[in-house]
Length: 251
Ligand SMILES: Cc1cc2nc3c(=O)[nH]c(=O)nc-3n(C[C@H](O)[C@H](O)[C@H](O)COP(=O)(O)OP(=O)(O)OC[C@H]3O[C@@H](n4cnc5c(N)ncnc54)[C@H](O)[C@@H]3O)c2cc1C
Image: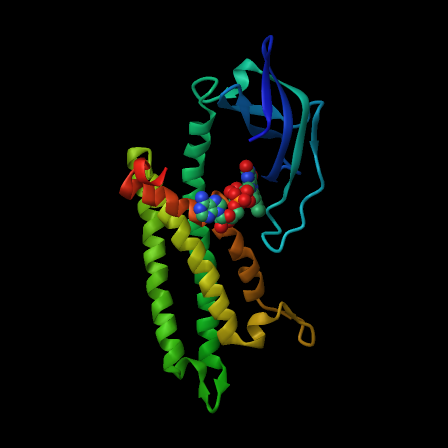
């Protein structure tokens, strides 16, 4: 955290650079978590005002529809009534409350990617014959897909449980952390095995001779970020461990 908000009459002057900011190349408003002395404060800034610069979109291995870019703030004025949350200094709590929702969302997106890879590859297995029989007749793959079907149901139930608890009680930090880890890991594992069982048809993006597109390579590339953003999965494990053992042990 290096972006600084310095108090001036009527508001703050913001200076710093934010990296990996989703939708920044197309956004009008931006939430900026800033250092205000010893505390953090969340400010809502207008992206069209002087001093805000957005770089060209980053080029990433996947998630191409989610644009990210650096955003630079040079002496950008933000008025006092654009402090988000109860008061100056409550920014970290505001940010964390948004992350809980985001983590559930990543769990759900992971399940959707895994389901899509599962549907494509399980159908393919009933069509493709190797050594005189369909891939779906091979017990190795039957067991793998039975296991994935079970994991899909578990991961789906977990993010839905987190969402229901959040709606009823206003918080679900632990379930959201679990849902994010399970959903994002499942998407990566399922995409890898779906490609494996489909062989070259899993690896190909466009079969140029037939002008046909195949979905698994993009799911494989898109799935990976779920294990990293909104707090890497190791950080989620830390959150869960803290719930089990307490801060005294986990820090
Ligand atoms: C596509 C994309 C969109 C993003 N959108 C936004 C956005 O809109 N706004 C925003 O603020 N940020 C955004 N981010 C940033 C994102 O939240 C961070 O990249 C993510 O939280 C991980 O932080 P990091 O990249 O600094 O990794 P680091 O913190 O450097 O961690 C690197 C790796 O180290 C390991 N690690 C780190 N800490 C621990 C630990 N305590 N124990 C064990 N292992 C550990 C993990 O394996 C982790 O993956 C985005 C990133 C991407 C790629």
